[in-house]
Image 1 (tube, rainbow, N blue to C red):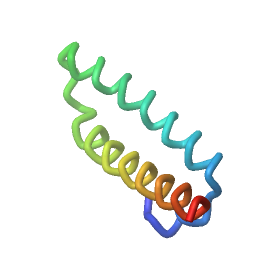
Image 2: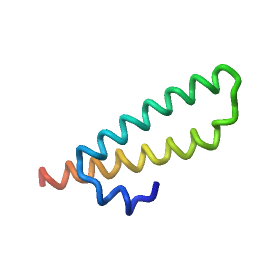
Image 3: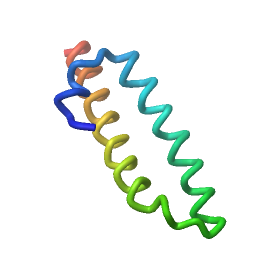
Image 4: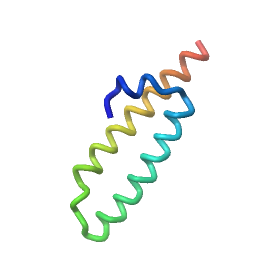
Length: 66
């Protein structure tokens, strides 16, 4: 997901999407641990998307405080 689309979301939506991405990462890690390596590209992309979400979430939370 692009950062521009994520910037349009509010804090609650970003938080829920980050939690959902974390759950998906957990399931992909389980699959990869069981020898199903088809999800490696998806895992990497999802990991980067989650990092973008958390970065924007922290930016928005810091903007409210400051």
